[in-house]
Image (cartoon, rainbow, N blue to C red; front, side, top):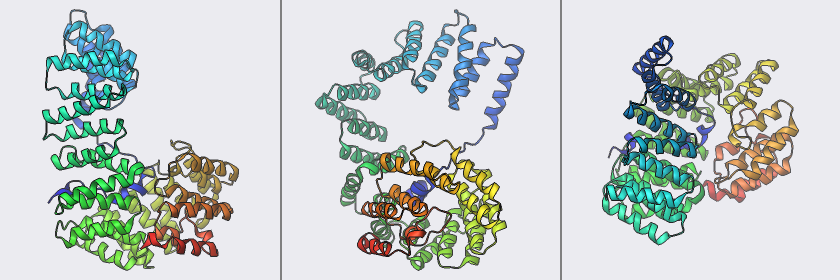
Length: 532
């Protein structure tokens, strides 16, 4: 089975690295050359409507809707009325840009212009129906979807459009009939299951949605990644439902390692490490797959549980199978550091950096090993390199400020690093922004408390992580009673990262001030079941 090689999403990547990692897209040299050519043409003749149209289309492809709209507006000024087809294409493009900007009235006007120029154009009728649906003009949208059905009786877009409207009109029986009809029209198409899952979600039927996502994964490879992402998101609000759906799939196909893997990955993402370990081991012991990423996932789980020797055995296996894998070497470095083998931890981090110099995880692992070795100068260099790679990672800047201020005696640069956290583009109540921790480090204690209290009152804490951060914050703020209250809530919700509770010591992103208090060991003992 090649599933793991095709779509591996390590558990830690679903949680911890959500702290501000920005996707980077590769530049297409051919597209860049075309853009330069369009710009050159327009510098000579600003009225060249064909160049404006093509550049607008390229901006649209790049999701740069402001520039795309500016170009297409100009193009429509200059395209001759006699160029009917080109004007229709331009209105269609502008309508799509307006849809992406959620300006549905303007999009509707543009799609109507297209249909004036090309009456009965099927794709545009669909676009107009979608705009009408988004404007909650359901009777008109229904008319367009029915026109589509008359034009093509097998149109899935029409069937699912009518199903969504039926849900909005509270005609759930009709909606169910329509999505079942769609499945009859195309039973071996994962996209049908994806769309049916969307309708089930609208209907408040998460179990139906979960079953559909699992069927999408089982049907073909086209939507495996999307279905998996939806399952992960659903698990945040309906974890038992998602696990039940996967367990049912496993009962029906007990030799399908993919389902064990997905269930394990989601359990791991919810800090349910023992359940994840059980499923990963079933894959290995049942010879359902031998991909080294499974051993890496096991190593992550054992590391989180504080079982470092078992973690090392699995990390060694993963690195032995893929010596140049950056993530595996980073993981091994972290485990070695927990085993107090700082020199070896640095060697593994260096291997990770060598295999991928742009990896922030590798550079941070290197910095942590260097800190353990009291080589603070090189540690700050590694963190600075990471900051250049990703200037929007708040955890990185907290660590960098801590090293500069505490170990390099460079308070000015340290404070600048903390200030940078406050400038990042995160919602105020996003716990992963770490704003309050930066404020504490800057001496803005009251502002930090307002931030943390806002987060605790508004953020959905589906696995205890938010309250874990609350415990960290109030521990360093000196409010131990509130810190222990957050700690208990976090443990109640199942935050079973024993390493984080007992060993993490970077900057102020930990509960170190609580560990000497008798209440700390009492709470860990009270909730010991989540670690076993």
